[in-house]
Image 1 (cartoon, rainbow, N blue to C red):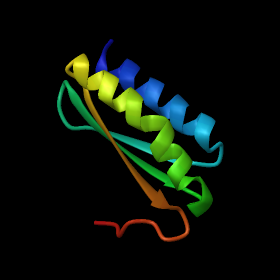
Image 2 (image 1 turned 90 degrees about the horizontal axis):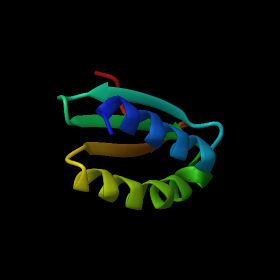
Image 3 (image 1 turned 45 degrees about the horizontal axis):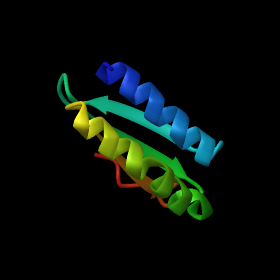
Image 4 (image 1 turned 45 degrees about the vertical axis):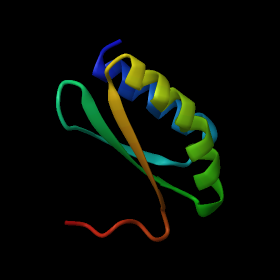
Amino acid sequence: MTLDDAIQTMTAIVKRASASAEVKAAKISDEEARLTVLAPAGDIQAIKDATFQPVMDLLKENLDVQVFVYDKDAPPPKG
């Protein structure tokens, strides 16, 4: 699996857990990416639960995809 495939897979998992979530991907290197997820507060735990094991599985393939989930009504500071 490529990093792009991993990003697409994780984005799909997030969207299944929360259809209204916004996902922004940032590639850190050829093997590492960060997904910033803005979702309703009520969906945050479902997203964390849905992404935990797939993230662990990707690590076995030497792909580090970190998923950071934030309340869309209180997003992280810009900058």
